[in-house]
Image 1 (cartoon, rainbow, N blue to C red):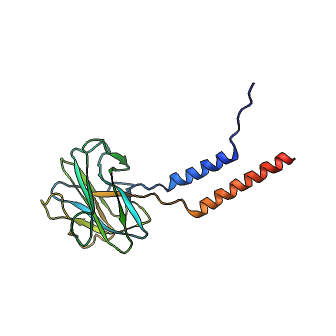
Image 2: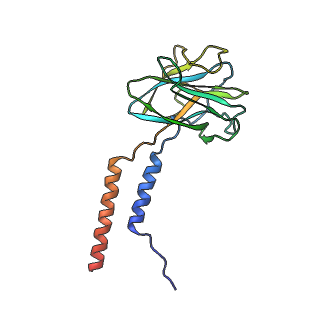
Length: 212
């Protein structure tokens, strides 16, 4: 009869490192924890202005899915420099449940688009077909690399376009609207060193057991 197999020490270390890596994977730039207000999104593009604290890149653009049950219609979402011009990157998130759901948002991958500290950006979306957007005003978790500056919107009836307008009192707020996902946070060097130290300790223990 075969004895039960034990999980080796290196396997435990590998699982530990994988756990740390998975916990560092990025989600939405803003992850809502509760819904306070919703808005009709069809007359305009709603979004927000932001900057980054470290070099990173956008890997997916997304839009708010009010009931997390699919979009009633396709939604256009884009990223602009706050100074204006054409979108740096844009996409259309398909109606229904085709796009991946992350929290209250559905995301579509885009060409990796770098973000630079010291530069201000706008992200915004136009949802049609009766879909709603939501307000962020502290009711969620913000990726630590992101600084939310203020809420933005385009002219009423303009459809999808540069959200160049804002209102007093929206500092730190966002119309969601558009959202995005960043590259994962790199595994901290301290975690690698800790893992390496554990591997070394495990090897030393095995040597001692073999000599005993």
